[in-house]
Length: 147
Image (cartoon, helix red, strand yellow):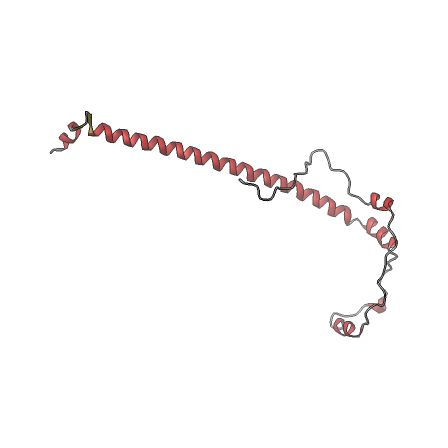
């Protein structure tokens, strides 16, 4: 059989070239469909991850604001006064090398040290400030959720 004979040969009324062409066309259509489907899934996954990044950035800003509030010197000074803390006397300061000797000589305290009672008013005044309107706190993630 010659090369021209392949183009003219028929199987059940169809030329072999037409059947091969149809198979190639169907495989290309299926391949394009699958590629678009996988690309859509990847696009959704990328959008979900970007949303999580934005939520984490908002949460990070919120935590940074809370740390800034908790580290205010005025607030720490008020807490120290409420707990009746005093600065360390210079004769209680030692070098790093002498810490081991001090720890070995030190006796354990006889009674636990108690702080001054804290009233609800001081706790309410010490609470974090309200969030700005442009910051949305994301809900906590659900554990065990299927994706």
